[in-house]
Structure formats: C-alpha cells, structure tokens
Length: 341
Image (cartoon, rainbow, N blue to C red; front, side):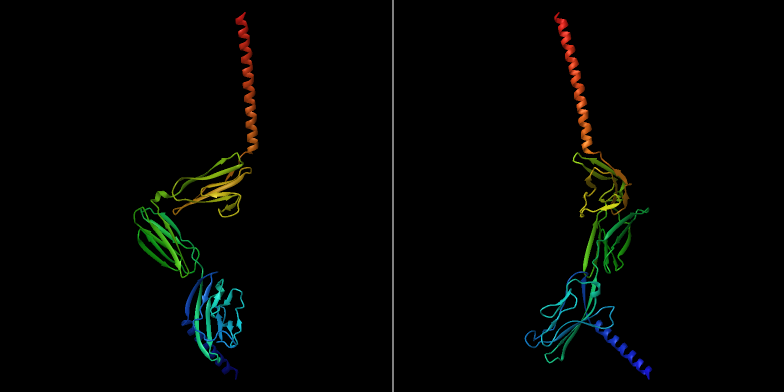
C-alpha cells in the first residue's frame, strides 16, 4: 500500500517543480550589484491601504538553496504590517519590497500575491533577482612578436559574466563572459587601444596609447638623497620606457599611497625616516612588461652626527687659519723692525 502513495508523492513533487519552473520562466528579471539597494515593486494598485481593513498581500522568496517559497513579509487584512526578518529588508509605504544591502543569498525568485478585502486572491507576480559582482578595471598587456605583429591581451579579474570589447585602431573584437580576450594584430604603431568590460550592473574601461615596442621598461635602479631634517627620498629610476606605474616594498611590506604609513608615496618617489636602515625594492610596470629592482639597504647617517663632524671640521680649519695668520703677523712685525734699524 505504501508504493502507490510514494508514486503519488513523487508525481505531486514533480508537478510542483514544473509549476515553479513555469512560474520562474514568466518572471521579470531584475539585476543588482552586491551591497547595493534595490526596490522590488508592488505594481498592483491597492484600494485599501489604511484603516480597519486593508488589501492583504504577501511577499515570498525562493533562493537556489531553498526547495519552496519562503514567507518573508506581508500586510494582513487588518492592516498589520510584518517587515522582513532581516534588518536589510523592509516594506515601503506602497508595499514594495526594499533590499537595502544585497548579498548573493538574496538572489532568486520573489513572489508577490495581493488579495481583495474579502481575502479572495487578486494578482500574483514573479520577479527573478540576479545579484552580480561589479567588474574590475580591465588590464591591458602587450607583447611584440618576432614577425612584427602585436599580441594584445585584455583581462578582467573580478565581475560576474563580464563582456569584453577590445578596440585596436578602431578595429573591434568581442568576448562574452570569459573575462579574457587575446588578439594578434599586424597594424603598425602607434596604437590606440581601448578595452571595456561590462555586465548588467557595471562598466569599466581602460585606454592605452603605446607609440612603439620601444616603450618597454628596462634597467630599473634605486637612487636616494638624505636630508638635514632627518628624512630620505628614494627614487625608482627606469633607464628607458614609457607610462610606468610604480609600487614599493619596504622591509617586506608593500606601500600604498592611501594607507596611514610613515612613508609618503608619490609615483616613483617615496619619502620617510632616514635614521633607520631600510630594505627597499621597487617594481615598475606598463602595458609591455614588469621590471624589479633588487632589494637594497638604504641608510643615512644621523644628521646630528653629520652636523657635529662638520662643526668640528670648521673649528679645525678656523684654528689652523688663526695660527697661520698669527705666524704671518709675527713674521711681518719682525721684518719691519729689522728694516727700521
């Protein structure tokens, strides 16, 4: 007797799944970026929204992890409002559902049912919410090949299903949802290269204008200057190349211009305390390559000690000059006396 019941249960479950899939197939697609706010509208006009009796409505949600729609918010027929259990979710005055800081767990099917004052069903609508990660800035890399052609690579590290459009001297190349595109071109320099990445919630673009393969970076080195105020300025010097971006490492820690570091970062220069020895390295990069300096210990003498040595030297020089002047004066007096005799 249990087998027919099991068959009926499986048939009912299958029918429910088919109904849910059909419902989601007719749903309206909405797109939102992670941590953004979105309003899922209650589009049905309700005649009774206050007083002793209201049009009842119920919001439900089904995520990919749920098997069934879950009740999340409602207004009852006696006008009692129940907001979402999550603090990031609430009902607006007109009954729309507000998600204040969306996460990936908020994606899925949203269902809204409205009722007449007599509690008979009025309308039902489905929305499917897609929560996407914003695309990051496209990174363009170039490689000059031996056959005088140019390999152009554009990649996007972050973002949900990014679509890439690469333009080289007005010639367009497209790639969908892979986050990476490689194109080999024989167009002569100079090159006007643009790479844009976008999805339903964001768009970013990177432009580069290399003049030739001679723009590749070569032979980086460190140079430094000690100052009397106890600071040191370290420079990252590249022998050749163009449009370099610089990053620094001091005692194994990367420096960022927007952090509360004791070092001031200004492109290919950093300025900091000169009283301690520092293990410093620099990386320079552009669309062609990356180059590094070897780690170098930078150390300036104590300015007070340096000033003390200088002061001592001045005293010695003045002492010698004084004695030389005294000897010359005595010698002149003696000669003058002899001449007068």
